Length: 84
Image (cartoon, rainbow, N blue to C red; front, top):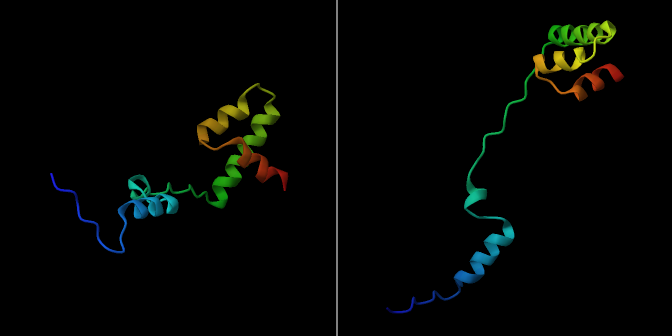
């Protein structure tokens, strides 16, 4: 089998190294659609914060965590909104 003829000024090994250095490979060419963040209206936020306050005030163990799971938001979101 004949050897491939190199193209002048184009070294395939250099281009592969350059592409790897730039982070260009099959995986990086694929595009991944970013997840859309949920947007809560002001009334929804107020409802969630009030429900969280009542869950904490009830003294029932795990009430706040159960509420947050139901609403599907992390605890840090409540901590940030009530810390202000």
